[in-house]
Amino acid sequence: MKFTTLLVFITFIVVLVSSPAQIESRVVVKSTKPPCNTIDLTGCWPEIFYKTKPSAQCCGTLKAQQPCYCDFIKNPALRKFATSPEAHVALRFCGIPFPTC
Image 1 (cartoon, rainbow, N blue to C red):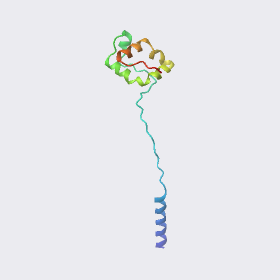
Image 2: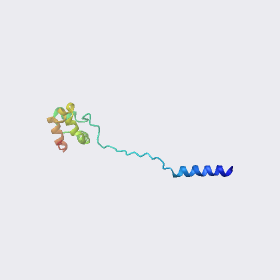
Image 3: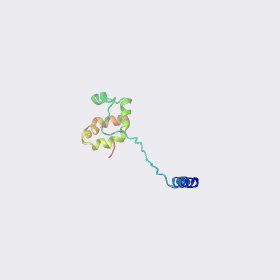
Image 4: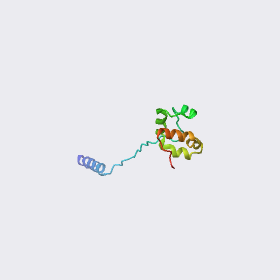
């Protein structure tokens, strides 16, 4: 009886070790692109209304959104803001080239 139990145990171990384990792998890609569904104008309101040189805060905000400019231009709800003369002036003051999409 002990021999049979030992044989079953060894068979179980061999089957367990020799069967390939299922490994789940995932690729996680972190996007550095901000969400492109709204234009953030934090720190830019005085410059837009009075058409003055943008502050460092405004330029930082605009530079952070630079990957989204083409999305803004393609979005009918945002196009008029993204392509306005004020947007061109603000981008030029901040040293950000206007995108060619």
